[in-house]
Length: 437
Image 1: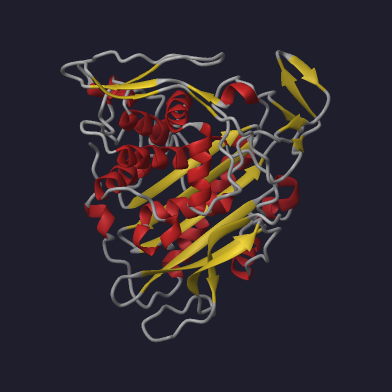
Image 2: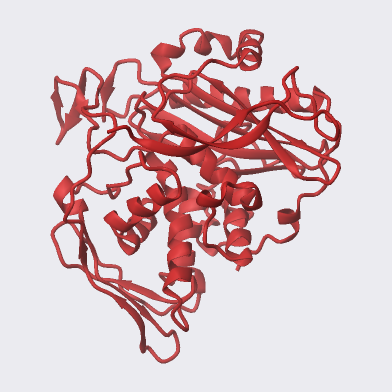
């Protein structure tokens, strides 16, 4: 049976009046149903930008070796300020597996907020104290512990802050358990991402244990009374995996021993780059999303997500991350390259989610410069593991991956500043509605 999905694609011809002409192509966004695609045709624009940059081309020239994939979406405003999207791809291929690592935290954060709305229980919000119990092997507890500092209380909101600000894995586990394996993936499919598979905690649990999720209780902070109880759950229908058997590398370490055979990713989390790119676009521009892809979130939910997607650990005001370990560029690979000595530029806002694991390095971002009045979406992933051994900790993140992503973001930002726009970006509405609560 053919797997179907709903995607946002650039297609057709635009009417010229009131629309921006971009790189000789006049395009609009449409809703299309398609099968899981193989590699798409490379954008001549992206190819040219990569070839012309001596710091990018050595990697792009060996794109197959580095498993490089890039999505660059131009945003063109019309006279009314409405955005129109033109997507450019470079070696984009949903059938080329990469480990999404922390990229899965974006859909988990989004769907956790959506679930709270769907439950519609009086007193149940993202600020409600949350206690996680245990009911199966490999599960860990997270009790409710009252604290004078509200940032230290376990809540859905605080878990999302920890995930989006510093990519906290334990926070992800708690919300994976809140959502449940089967409902989480069923909702992704309903939103138009049927190939996505988020089936694992970030913990050494086997496939069977990850199908079991914990009992959870939400409590009134003042009285301690129970507001909502969710029993332990089990996904009784194991998932199939769209790519079949997936094995990478020539060896891997397990329990301190080198296993001289490829690492098996078959049942690992799987999230194509296009999926997470589209979800970020939906969070930032919900009114432009196809109806089937729209989320059941409130304006306050969107403002909350946007604030923590763009904030730096220090700049967020979240009390847990005052340590120097969490510098401004901690989770901003595009533009900054995660350099600890690079302070955030006050006129540059980056709304993003990143991934770093097993030699894979990814960043999915919306980048806007409020002074230059530019905006674009940029997503990229590459594999930097020269010895092709996994779990040995010997990856070229610092020497190859992060410098490439930083240069790529800077190159696209420079191009955006130079390319003509019929209508300049005005302050986008969501800039004025971000909310840190």
